[in-house]
Length: 159
Image (tube, rainbow, N blue to C red; front, side, top):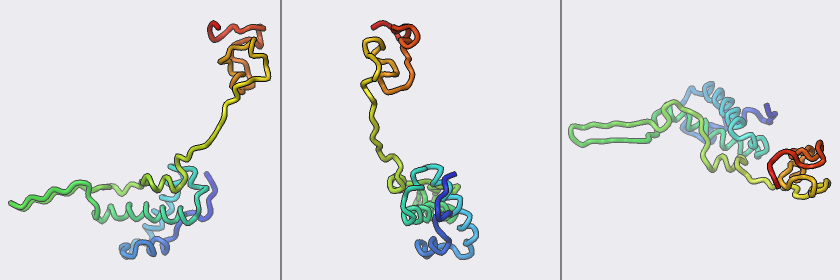
């Protein structure tokens, strides 16, 4: 497990500051969810350990709020209303209160950031002996064409 300070990423007081209408008497439940959501964020986006504490705090509060609001049935994915004989159907958007991260939250936590890398196309070994696609030509420390053991390529097809 990655050691991140502070853990959980936010306190119940910080959640209340961002959600003034938080249900009364749910402090213990919120504290548990803050801890669970903090671990969820680290599991889903390991790069979150490098994000700023303020970003982690803001996002964990949003994740917990969405989870807690699901139990209040405030959001619905589908709503059907009929005028006569007065029929209303609703399907909750997150019926089990599952944690999830939005695309912007993942981006803010550092998920999916591109990293540069390179491939060594030359080898300190003689390229006339090894196949052009031998592992040594790509910077490996081992030969995959067999020229090291036989003096000429014996694996990986013809030239």
